[in-house]
Structure formats: C-alpha cells, structure tokens
Amino acid sequence: MNPTNSSLLSRRQWLGSGLAACGYLATGGLALARAEETPAPKGYTVPGPVTNLHLAPGLKTRLVSEHPNGERTYAVIFAKGDEIMSGLTEFAVREKLAAGHFSAIGALEHARFGWFDRARKAFRDIPVNEPVEMISLIGDLGLANGAPAIHAHGAVAFPDGHVRGGHILEAVAWPTLELFFTAYPAPLVKERDEETNLFLFNLNTK
Image (cartoon, rainbow, N blue to C red):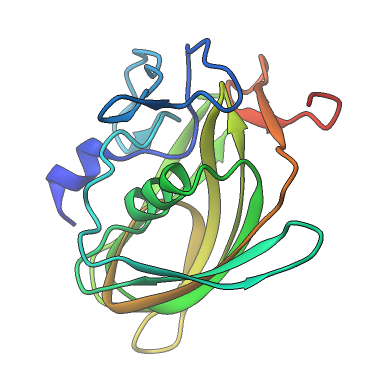
C-alpha cells in the first residue's frame, strides 16, 4: 500500500462547511470543508473528505448518453496507478454533479476497505496489499455541505478465488477500472447524523 496516498485519502464526508448547494467550486479549485480533527485508533480510519484530487492523472471521461429527463451517463476510465476515490471525486467536482449512482469492474494494484465500527465511529481498516480483480464496485453521490460526497462499496477476488470487500477507503487501479456513472438532474442532500458522525441522505432536504 502506498502510505502517501493512504494519508491523503479517506472516505466521502465533507465536514464543517457552510457552502451553498451549488457553490462548491472556488477560484483555482474545490472549496474543501475541513475534517474533524479526531485521531483514529491504530488500524482504523475516521470518516473525512477526499482532500487530494490529483491522484488519477490517467483518468479519461466521456459523456455517452443524455436523456430527455436530464439524466446523463458517463464512461469514466481509470488508467494504471490512478486512485479511484480521488479521481471519481475530481470528476464529480468538474462536472458539477449533485446526485447519481455508478458501477464498475476492473483490477487493482492495492486497496484499503473499511468496516464501520459503531462504537468507535470509525472504519476498521481491511487492507489489500496485492493485485486483485475488482469483481464489483457500486456507489452513489449526493451533496454534503454543498460538495459532492462519494459513497462506494466493493468486492475483490484474490488469485485463489477468495473474496474480500467493504466500504472503499482507497483503491489504486491496475491496469484499468471501467466505471459508468449516471447523473441525476435533481440534487440529493446528505446531512450529518449525530449518532454515527456520518453524512446520510435526507430526502426531505432540497
């Protein structure tokens, strides 16, 4: 696992910002909210924002269909060494996406999954330190404090066929990851849940 990437990446939340729903772009880049400064126990990752949006330099995207109801579908293709959470967040920011869902298959060089521990309000790390097949990746996107928040789960297969997976904290593609993203015209909002410290969908908020 690349320790530099691991220190820069976490899951999907955007905390402590008063940004308006469509005001998450600032001059020269993304106006990122600050994560809460809560230390994680060893072997755990506290939920927080993806703060480095430049870890997928080989990422290519293309709009493949537009629908009369405003939905758009994109092909989002990751190259060797691209970090998926960073690249997917950067794509969402660039396209000003406010809601959507996605699925993907491919292969990974290494990854870090998580299992949410309710008592610790943090993800127990599930490291993957060898090449694996990405047999399933699914997820969604909403706005948390006005910024796009990616929530993704995945499963990977090892050489002997056994499977490991969970919430995606970090994943580096090799040789590729092929993702298709459907964007919705109406925004969906995620709000902080006091009990878990996670951002969850609130369908009563527009």
